[in-house]
Length: 158
Image (cartoon, rainbow, N blue to C red; front, side, top):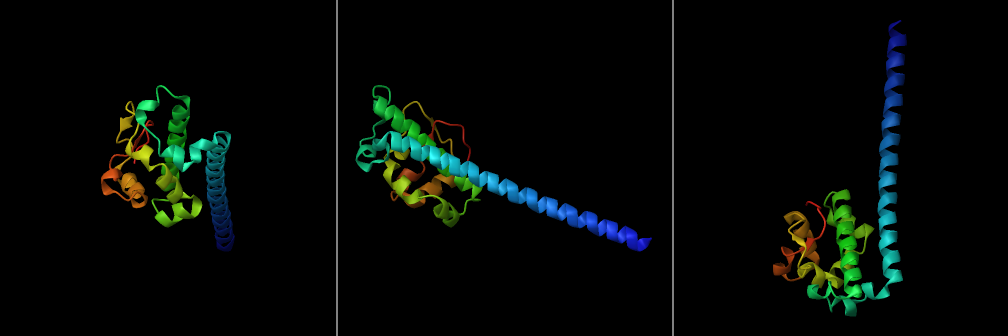
């Protein structure tokens, strides 16, 4: 009888362990698929409006143009998508720089769109991202004064 209880207990334990592993694996896979879809949406947006991904256009960013020019309104939306995506990946990858870099081309995005990061729209909410994320962005943006100025129009917390 004792052997039967032990066998039953072991079988239940092994089943629970397998179920837990499969649940974790499925959740991780679903999370990656969600991020892949977000990345695909950002790419589709930049394909539809190719100027958004061009350095020459990004360098013309001026927050005062958002209210008067549809191209800059799109660019603002594009940058918000990029920075929110980077933030989400940063959290997903548990603040590990190399893991973020292995998943997305963060360096080229941040170098290209740093003028937006440093000069957000006038009506934006400053300091929405935490200091930790701003320092992370600052790794890729060379001027240290630029690090703490970054902000977004969303309610993401760092």
